[in-house]
Length: 157
Image (tube, rainbow, N blue to C red):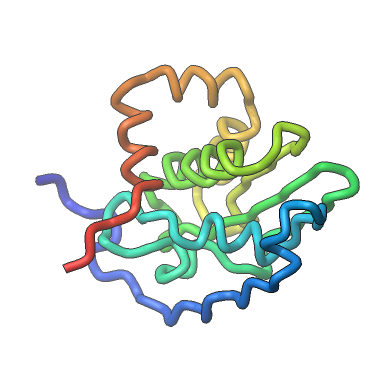
């Protein structure tokens, strides 16, 4: 097995589950997407190296999610656990894919590394912003398998 980038990451407490209101379950009412709803979609994504979620590692924070439902845009900044994290592109791709699969196609999804938190921030952000590169990455069966592992629910012991 290869050596982990961050063998002993800090683990943070997760936020409580959001109370679902009756009107949110009523399909006859159109409600807008909000920050917490988007955060709930990505907080449970698995880290590619550890049996932990992105929320447990503080890679994603609700405060780093911006939603503008009226203008069909979602913006997420994530913070790799270490400045030289080799999994940063995979994490960003996993966040992007989760949102693209979960949201209506009207949304423009931007996923970026938070400024100053990764030594290859500009290169990773350029990759994540390039639709053709994202599409090509998802045509790679090995990479798609890794993304799907990050997005799958982990078996609990």
